[in-house]
Length: 167
Image (cartoon, rainbow, N blue to C red; front, side, top):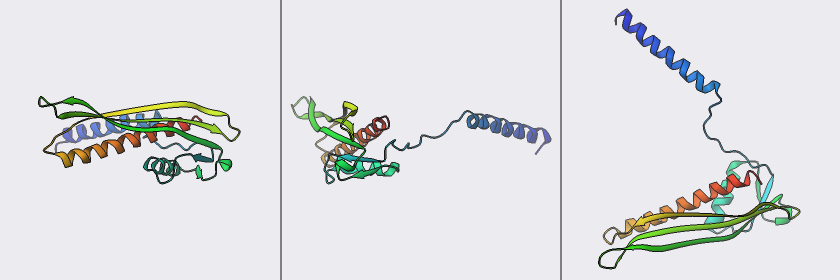
């Protein structure tokens, strides 16, 4: 290797180090899970429900907050007032068969403290996903629909956790 080529490579490496140290100096960090500001929570959704189970696991995974089975022992009470899943046909083929489907998940919740004071007023989250159906790929489309339902559920759990951080 020539001396000039070696110097060029060293200059590029030095420039890269300077640029990356600038990111470290500005406080850049990857997104992290932030624990909730209270020690315990009770959730009115049955433990056996898919949504309730995922919500409980997500709160437990954050660490620092335990999910109580007795509402009287909990610092916060999370009430899921509504959890509605719907499937609506929004488009048809020329022959009148369903072609486009809209999946929707609607959750309404609120949070109260031990004294019964509302810490988070009634909040509604509505998500929808559109899906094109196919008679030929019916099995695959059913699997895709289940995946989209789980994806919406995970997103709503994440949004609830973000709201709980301020409650």
